[in-house]
Image (cartoon, rainbow, N blue to C red; front, side):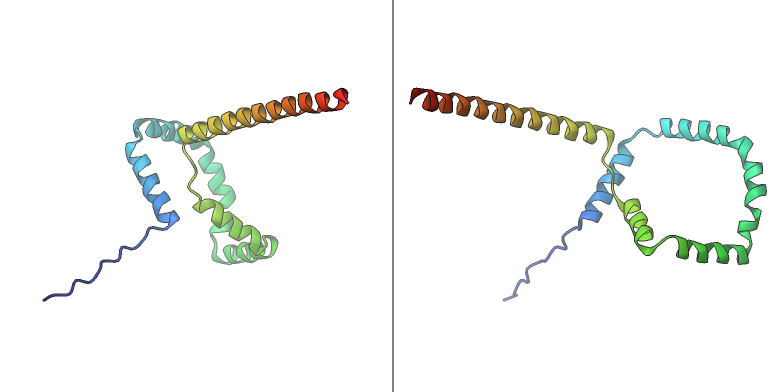
Amino acid sequence: MAVHKPRVRKTETVRQRSEKATAKAEAKSVKTPRRHIRRVASAAIKPLRRPARIISWPFRLRPVRFITRILGLILWPKYFRNAYKEVRQVAWPSRRDTWKLTLAVLIFAVMFGTLAAGTDYVLDKVIRRIVFRS
């Protein structure tokens, strides 16, 4: 008689789920508009490439890179560097999700405001009857 061991599934982390959702969203999105945007952007940047190369050539030298890295460590505290790394890892919602969440917040705000106004109205009437009746 064979003893069956229960299978233990590894649970996905939040980051893994968001990466999977991002990959699915990218697969669904139409790629032609992105290509068009990239083509237009590269055409707009093209005249600026040569001056940028001329200005940036010292920063490609090893000693200058070392010095700029040290200055960056001194001028940018560790808190800001870590915050920047964390922001880069955030899975931002799509435009559609943003609109859905905004609409949900607005509906909740209207409902809560209506509830607060209704409660205020009822309590006002009750207290006026109690105070003016005596």
